Amino acid sequence: MIIKNIWNKITIYCGCHAEPVEMVANTKGSTLFYSCPKYYEQNRSPNEHACANHIKLDDYQAAVEHLCSRIAENEANNSIEDLTGYRWSRRGIDFRVIKYTNDDIHIMVANKTALKH
Image (cartoon, rainbow, N blue to C red; front, side):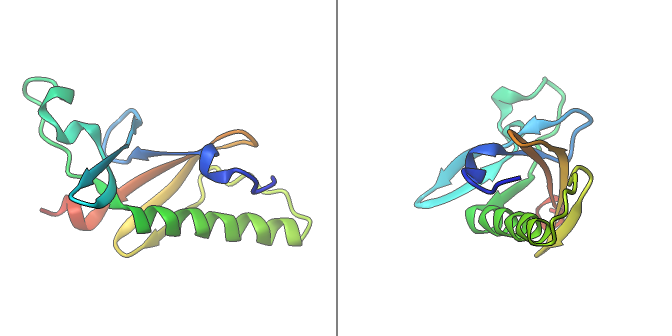
């Protein structure tokens, strides 16, 4: 897999729901972060609890860089690896690749620190 345009291929999902929920970009002041849309009342069913799962932009960027390194390592070794199911953690955040193709990379995210509160 060529790493070209990898940012356009990656979609992140909240790891707190039975079905994947795509995380959305938000800002608080000048800070960009991604959060579960189910944090906001208008995106939940009447009795559904707010989901506090979120990641900062630098954590998202670090995840992309981590994945790029893994892909580049595989390419350097002439190895083709399906990264579906690949897991790693960084700063209290768990990442898991749930779909890996030449066109799409879907990553499930669970910020354990944010979810403790």
